[in-house]
Length: 72
Image 1 (cartoon, rainbow, N blue to C red):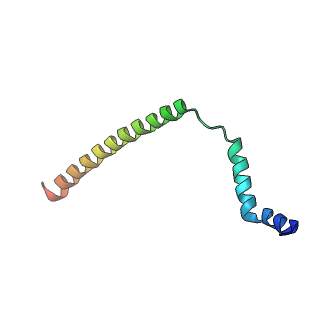
Image 2: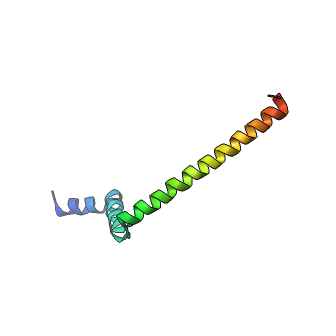
Image 3: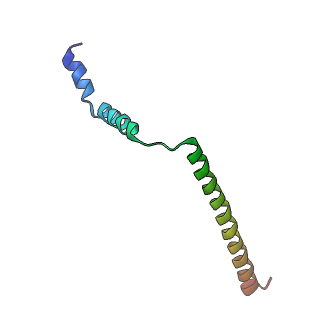
């Protein structure tokens, strides 16, 4: 294989994309394990609270509609 073949492989857009992606990932400032745990906990708590809240609203509307239109 000639050196031109090796150069042609390196200039392939797929390889350039992969090398650019790896270069960008090296620039990322990653969160610490403690920050990830804290933020994940907050997301889970907010999700559970909002799920319960929306569930109660849905239950209330169901009872209201059933009582209004279906006389149950």
